[in-house]
Every structure is written in C-alpha cells, then in structure tokens.
Image (cartoon, rainbow, N blue to C red; front, side, top):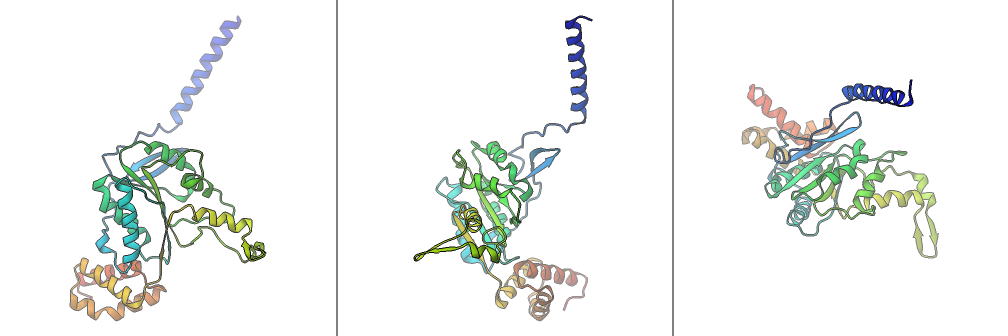
Amino acid sequence: MTDSAQLERLLSRAEHVLGRLEAVLPPVPPLPDWKSAVAFRWRKNAGRGWLQGVAKPHPIRLADIETVNDQKARIVANTRQFVAGQGANNVLLTGARGCGKSSLVKAVLNEFSADGLRLIEVDKNDLIDLPDIVDMVEGRPEKFIIFCDDLSFEAGETAYKALKSVLDGSVAAPPDNVLIYATSNRRHLMPEYMSENLEIQRVGDEIHPGEAVEEKISLSERFGLWISFYPFSQDDYLAVFAHWARQLGVSEAVIAASERESLNWALSRGSRSGRVAWQFARDLAGRQDDGTAA
C-alpha cells in the first residue's frame, strides 16, 4: 500500500471516529433569546454552559418588602444609577437569614426590567464560568446583574478566585453593563477561624493582619456596596406577617386574632424573619380557605 493510500485510510478512519463522537456529544447550546425573558439561569451539561430564560420570574415587588427601608433605599439607588448608565457598585448583602436579601434583588429586577435591566443567576459551583458569561453579555444594550445567592466558600474551595477576578482583579476592565449582586450569611464570604487571629502582628501602633485574614477580606472588599441585615424585632415580624396575610386575602379580624399563633410559629422555627412570617401567612390563608382558621 502506498504512503498516500495509507494516509487516505487514516484520514477516513479519523473522520469516522469524529462522526461517532459528535453523535454522542450534546448539541452546541443556542444563543439566548434576549427578548424572551428578563431573568436567566446559567446551566451546564457535559461541560458546556448556556443561558436559559426563566419563564416565570419571582413576582415580588419592592412594596412587598417591609421593615428594611434603609437597605431597600440603598440597593434601589445603586440599581437606578446602574440602569441610567451612571456610576454604580457591585453589592454584597449580608446578615440574618430570611430577612429579605435575595427578595430585594428579585424586586429590583421587577422594578427596572422595563428600563433594560436583566438578571443572570449563577450557582456558586459555576463561578468558574463567570468570564465566559461576562464575554457573552459585554457590548449588549441591556444592563445585567449577575446574581449569586447564598454565597459562601469553604476551606479549600478555589471558585472564589474567579469571582475576585471578575469583580476587580483582571487585566481587562469590567464591562459597564455588568454588576454582581451577591447574598451571604457571612460578611467575608469565607469561614474564619480562631487560629487566624494568631497570625495578626503588631508593629508599633499598627496592626497587620495575617495572610489568611487578608485573603478573606480582599474578596468582600471588592464589593463596593455592603448592605447589612439584622434579625427582626417582634413588631417587625408581626408587620410582615400582617402584610402577607392581607395579600393572601386573610381578613383583618383573623390577622389580629392570629398574632399569638404567628409568634409561636416563629418560636418553633427558632427565627423571627420575613421568610417565616410569609410561611405562616400562607399556612393561615390555606386554613382560612378550608374554614379551620381562627
């Protein structure tokens, strides 16, 4: 067999193998239809990522979020500046669980979507794909919030490095149409250990944190706007419960008669929060519909 015949045979076999591989690989994901949705999720399959439109985004509105007026005003002002093409910051919302952090992000999307705001939800495990997501939306006329909910990193995880790079650490300037909004129960997003305090050195009157502490602080400091949330007081909790109960059609008389029960509900859950108030209001509304409410 001549050399040319052998080469032709090898090429034919290679094409056959490639054809079989293409048959089992997932298809190339289509480009997102930006007009079909205002919210998107980053999805992955067999190593390929794509943006999937959310058919029914959460309908919560700013008016539904009570008792956190200062936090609401700050995130609304930042988002309004962003949508208007003015200076705005990446936002880190931290603090007590169930007190409205993620709800506020969803609410500002509903408030400003008509002005071109879009939201992309990215799971912590997919943060390594942030540069690809940013490249996909850069240059588009819409404004994009990349939303990372309940964000925290355990010891040994490295995905936070991709987040740091996109926030403020890459040789490329961040695009003007992208901001990152993240929620977390941890102020510095990473676990903190007592042993790390031993790394702190004092030189004269100056305190120098150890390398582990510096690494953790450097991530949260890349968010220009920190918004803190605190546990609800009893009055705050009751106000939120009453709001949601009214929204769900519960009568004022039943709401007033159910305050003690709502507090017992929160006590059994170990938390007075907006989430717990919403859950009790749903339960009460359901019982009212079947005639078992107070």
